[in-house]
Image 1 (tube, rainbow, N blue to C red):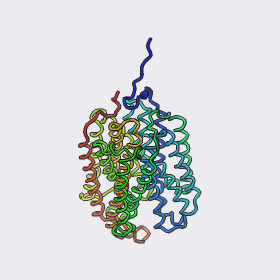
Image 2: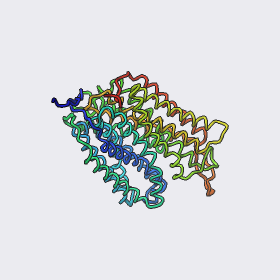
Image 3: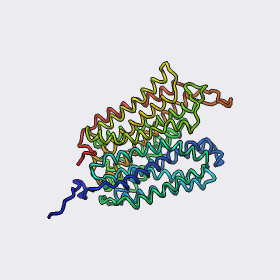
Image 4: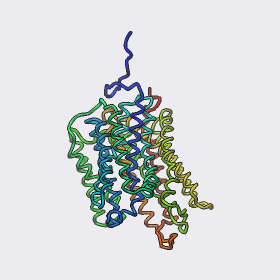
Length: 490
């Protein structure tokens, strides 16, 4: 009797797995949720950080900025290192950084070490992109779509659960306990990955492009830092304009150096192929729409009832209203896999963009309609956008993986994840500027004045985000159709 032959991957020559490693996929998704939590657990603490760390309020905003910068820089670099030296190794290292950073934050009594800890937490942000890439190596093709979708959805689940999780622990236990809990979760994630995730067989090898990595890091700092701090520094300030100019110069030099490198950090020939390039630009637009809905509803829900459309909820209750969006993101990531199986990932991406757009339309109609805004409307809007994000975010890695060789998935997914960060950073700058520009002072419950955005501010921010959704839909439909990576692939 002849032995049963397992299929072989056409790109790498590696054996295609024939059993679904459910435990490994579960551990990877849990690790993604832990990393996503790092983006939102700090939000309830921001007003208290000046007192907790004896620091200037303006300086404490770096607790958000430095994590964003570290995460943006490490994501494409970590993907490339994973392709070269092994994705499991980089996943364990990423979770180790989160655990170390969380412990440093928990032990901090002043701002400088706290910022070091937040930067280390940011170094774990490449986990989701690496997890998606390793799934191509270990998950049977017929289960790949749903597994990748769940991993992608971990970003939304962690983001949605982060606010109530952080608010509950910080309010009822202590802020130190919050970071100790994160450290413990990250250590468990690292151990779980080491024990359950097999090492991928496909590796590119070669020498690491240190010059390219330094250039990319400088380029991202010169772009994301003024986007994050522009409203505080002033958009016409010499520092802001100078950093944007430095970004352009460094980007041009980096491009020419990378094109001539023997082992470039990012293969620009692949990155500029039409399917990959259009997917990445659509990811920027989708990331913009995603983060706008992180910024707009929470302000409206927590605004005093004396303000325009204010609902007067506390942080914990407001975050509970928005939390179901993460659950919907998880559920619809599996719907995305089915859509991809039937119609291809570009249709899934366009569909996700359309559902997100529908959420913004409902929000705009609710603001301008004859009825009063209420938390039920906000819950519906958040669920629509969560569902759309579940479909769209799951389609992006499917598009990337159907367009690149298996040994380039870490790098390509890292760049795609970076594009989402660029989108969220741009949203934070644009939407934040609009909402700040429209602020008016209204009396709070204790009689003091508090600044809240006007209805026109909400409308302008929502209209621009709706435009980003339309752009994502158009770009998705412009991607050339390819054979989908899906649950029916084999």
